[in-house]
Image 1 (cartoon, rainbow, N blue to C red):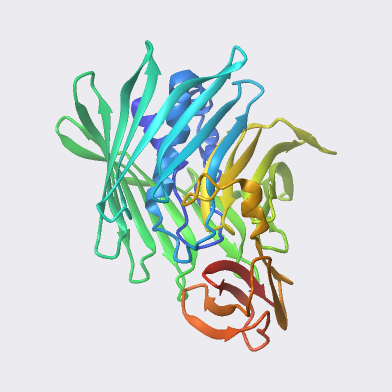
Image 2 (spheres, helix red, strand yellow; image 1 turned 45 degrees about the horizontal axis):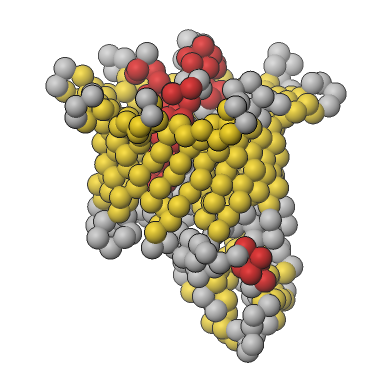
Length: 434
């Protein structure tokens, strides 16, 4: 049972490292369901294990991605994420920050008309306050906090996370029970994830994930293998992009008993004019080989391009019906950052982590806008607190400086079609040239 739960935790934790692209761990609960883990999955959602399940997956996704390259002075971080579930009850996560870094997360459940403590996460960073080196989880029991789970992290010279060690609390001390080994290519893209568990004083393989990239270092395929007496192929995900280099499809292919790839499930991604992910549509192929709707998630964003709500729905054959349980990707900072949520729906609020005492209304007065987005010729810049002509730098999505100019109207007609980053007086915004 413990090993299977670990597999589920890992499956939900995997993340793409590139900006503004949905992540590969988005819907792997479908794989769990496909392999008759329904009962196990439900068990992990109840009470004590419920919090561990989602928070550990969140910890993995945070540590596997390096800090965003274009982190600016007006950076946002979550304040509260509320998760609503008609069957399991409502819960919330509240975040606190120190030196601009999240150092404490409190998880609570709504019971008896009040919020009750359930779990907390304590983050430790290195001396430069840059890389997270330890995460400790504690649960509330018998009127005090008790150790539950611990993770430690190691990095290479390029600040890539190369090892995660997991520990359980055995009533007296931490006991190491699993590890993840991560390997990267010359583009610092994650190419291999090896998951192992500790048994009889030795490491045993559990799962292997291999990522394939094209010549532009874009992820094109994720292959999953599981260890029995040797590595056995489980399934793979083909990643397809649209003309603006946004992920448009995740197509899942299962390795069946006849040694053939069976393609019967996919996720279709849709975006708004600001390139925020607004819909994840799940579809299946049935006997007639026609893609049919199964369920979907729809998102809403605030004026700073932070996800403030999400709703899960399932298709009845004629209309969409609310209250389908799902796992949400809570994107913020123009899809450069992400948290997870689960349930029927979620809502979220955000703060400036470097100035947590500033009133939100004051922060919103200093908003920065660029338009139109997508843009073909002239990119207009509007910022309420600009008293002089702003300095504008245009970067490629890989971080290469392409333009450095002053003005509120920037001619970008010479740029090729694609996604770019605009730096305006130290603040960053993503836009699409088409």
